[in-house]
Structures are given as C-alpha cells and as structure tokens.
Length: 444
Image (tube, rainbow, N blue to C red; front, side, top):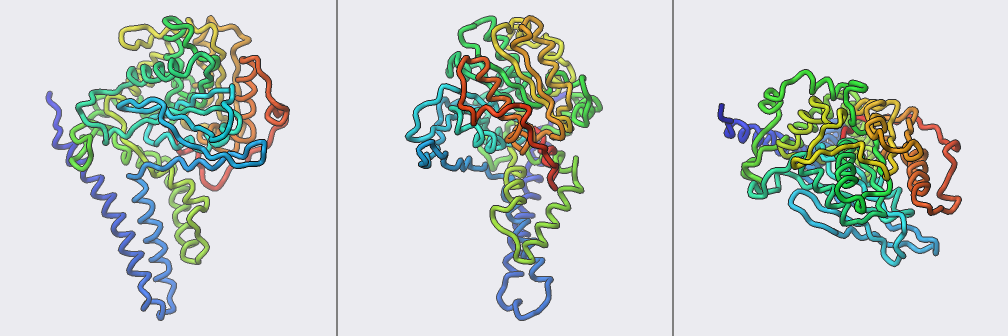
C-alpha cells in the first residue's frame, strides 16, 4: 500500500506552526506586559505575564536552534588560559568529526573520541563531558546533522551507515585512540570495533568505554523498551514518521521529528518539568531570574532538538530493540557480519547508573558477555549508585566519580601514567545527591 506523504507533510508543518505560534504568543505577552504605562498599576499580574512571556518565547525559540559549544578556556599548568577552538576534521553529509583544539598547548598523548547519540538532541548534549575531559586529553566528537537540513538527494542514513561513519572516524584517528560511546551509539560502536578487529586490526582503538547503552534491551526492561514492544513497526511508521515541510533544505525527507521526540521526553516526567517552569516564571516575576541560571542552562540544551532520518529511527527500533541483533551477536553491516567474538585486543569498559530509567542496569554490561573471546583482564564494569541516565556522562556522578575511573582505565591499557592529581583512587568517592530537576529524563 503506497505511503501518503501529504499527511506527513501537513503534520510536520502543523507541529512547526504550533511551535511558532507559542513563540509569538510569548513575545507578544512579554511586549504587552512590559509597556511602561502598566507600571502605574500596582498589580502583580503584569509582572507575571511579562515573566511568562519571556520564559515561553525563549523556550519555544530554543527548539529550532542548534546550541553553540561555548567551550570555556582551559587553564594550563603555566596559569594561563588557553582558548579552545572547534575544528572540523572530517566533513560528511550526515555528520562531521570535530576536534577541540586547545591553543598554545602541546598535543596530549591521551586521545579520546566521544561518540554522541543521535536520538533527538545535538552533540552539544556532551558539552560538559567535553569540558571535563579537555584538560587531560585531546578530545574529538561526532557531530551529527539535523535531518531536516539534509537534502533528499544525499540519500539514506540508517544504523548501518552510522556504523560505517564511526568506523571511518576511528580509522582517521588511528590505533592510539580511546573511544567513549554514550547511550544510543554504544551497540553500534561495539559493532564498528568488531568489524575493524576482523578486517583492519591496525585501526582498532585501544579502549572502548560504553556508557548507559542498550546492548541488550531485554536484560532490564524500561519504559523505553516496553514502548517498542507495545507497537508494531507499521504502527511506529504511521504514527511517528513525518515528511519535512518546505521551510527546510530537507523538504520531502521522511523523518522522526525532534519535536515529537521532545514531547515524549517531557511526557515521561511532566510533573517535574511543569514545576520547574512554574518556579522559573515566578522567579522571573520577582526579579530573581538570570540568563545563565540553572533552569536556562538545563533547558536551553534540553529543548534544542533535531530530526532523525526515518530509516535510522525505524532500523534502531527494529534491529536493536525488537530484533536484538547486537545482543544475539548477529548484526550485519553492508553484508558483513560484525562478530563481537573477534574483539580480542580492545579493552572494554561498561558504565551504568543504578537509577537509570532509560538504559537500566544490565543492558550495557551485557557487552562483556558478548565479547566472549576478550581476556578478563581487558574487561571492566562500573555501576554508579544513585545516578540516573544523564548523570553518568554529564552530571555530578560523571565529574566526581566516573570520569576519574574512565581516565584510569584508559591509562591502564595504554602503559602511560598520569600525575597523582588526575588519578584519584576509585575508593575516594563523593556521594551524589539528586537535584530538583530529574535530568535522567534527558533520554539519549
């Protein structure tokens, strides 16, 4: 039965119209309530209305703006600030390889590739992760493009293409590379490493760290895995896939819209998000708000969403979550089997959060069992108590506890040591208290 692109086209434009209308309403309320004459009326209504307008306008405007990296200068051992430049190393149609070059600093031997998720948010979701690693490493990141801005003439992009991109980036950076894959790309990074292990052993990374990834989604079901089980692929294609409207360069491309993904993110924890926005509006009305407070710092990133190609979204659900091709070691890329048992020389480290409700404990550590021919000395796992999904790669748990362990793991398998100040003992832990905003809901 033929698809009906016009229906998807209307749906996509309707969502964009609703977003644009709310942004306009916020701007209008802000302008009206800020009219000087209303200052003569001693009533808090106008202050609240102005605050609502400012928060609403900014929130809906963020949804179509790609955030900047805004990496602060790095303090060098000489006490000077070193500016960080974002250089594009490789440019591809669906994603680039970026290098965070620290000016006037000698290259560091420790080289890290952060594989960012393609699940609705931009790679800038890893900004704090990059910030924390830059003083001690040369950091690279995969910067995936928004599908709505990619012309249809550029072709498809599914999980096999994603894996081939990752392999290409690994080859370019060389064998002294340490890979960290965050959430969604964890199974595909494992597959890319397996293919290189068999076909180009000299291009394998030294270490592979998998953080909160769905290697085996059935190991510990969550709301995310249950959603995939409840719906057939036909239902998902009909309900979730839309066609990009004429406003963007990718007009006509079938996508899973970022706005639809954002709606599902927010609905998972609607009460917390509602309370956060109500508190912010009243804080603005009292004159206690700021441009860089905790609320804006979190939601400026959280609300900035990107579209995924339809084939990437559908193949992820069908092959990773429903088909369990990675979990059962039968994943193929371009007709080639990605046999995880071929991984023998790459040290593999899995990190999970005890309170992770996106990729629950058990899903990621399954990678160690799949790599059955990998020596036990090259396997390591860590379960972070009290940490949610976001916290294990960008929150307090990452900064205080997980990051030092990851750096130690990298150094243990590179034969190069670090100064004592960077090798804090694993047992010297800092308890992590949950914040007011449940940032584990920032699903990736």
